[in-house]
Amino acid sequence: MNTPQNEEALVARAHDLMGFSLGELAANYNITAPDLLLNGKGWSGVFMELLLGATAGSLAEPDFQHLGIELKTIPINQQGKPLESTYISIVPLNRFIGLKWKESEVYHKLKRILWVPLLAGKTISPAERRIGRALLWSPTNEQEMQLQQDWQELMDRVALGELDAISASMGKYLQMRPKGANAASRCWGIDREGNRVRVSPRGFYLRPSFTQGILALH
DNA sequence: CATTGATCATAA
DNA sequence: TTATGATCAATG
Image (cartoon, rainbow, N blue to C red; front, side, top):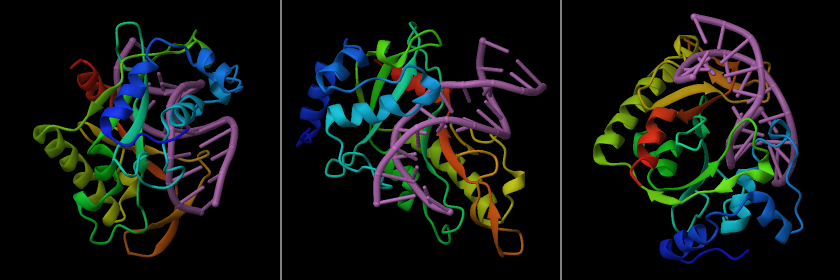
């Protein structure tokens, strides 16, 4: 799939997909949707990248590199309410020295997002999910201030090596939670004395209360 | 029933 | 291992 050359083309392409189920669209590509969501958690996101022509692959950059736009699918119920939090990026546990908000991966991804709602639910298979109205979004000044505050509070703890003092209950909009294959996963981090140590990987997530406000705008 | 901590699939 | 894409499931 070729990549859209501008925002308008990207949004138009996303709107053309509205109303289709992922199974219907997958058939056009001779792709089979996973039977169970458990075994294909990320499938709908990857498939939407294909449909819309994303270019970043597994790079730590916005999906549409030339447009500076990040793509996020978001599961919603019939009332339009998000069913899950939204993963944004990995937490830099070992390369955060001097890191400023505007240089962070979180900021670069959050500054412009194409949200693609998927009508979902426990009884709806991946193939049965239907595409809703896509929405191109950027945080308001007020939202960005709060996001930055959340990020700073969490990263301050990281910088002090106080990972054990961080819980998912911190952060008004942006939270920090485990992000790994399992609880035994390890990456490099810093302890309170500044030593390199093995720690469990974390990720930044947007709370459903925040994304609900975004989707409710339209 | 919303939330927090844990988990699944895949690429390089 | 670190990154992408996310949702699961135990718990309060």
